[in-house]
Length: 99
Image (cartoon, rainbow, N blue to C red):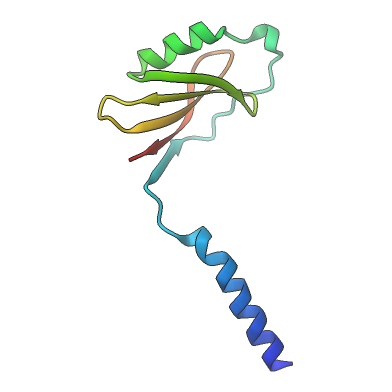
């Protein structure tokens, strides 16, 4: 029984280790949400691209992901960013920066 318990703990630790690994990605944002407005109320992709450019991003790609506009871009400092914008307001919800 004791051997089984120890084996289980070792196996659990092995699977949890990758989740605890350090990352070069930084995620910022608050508890803002993209909401659940119907797509008829959403801004156009062109408007979202302009909103992102207004935030200082060099936009590479825009797509829809989990009810948000997801913008792949380059920041002024050269870092890559995935920015999530509210589809109705164009407001930044969160961003993930890769260095």
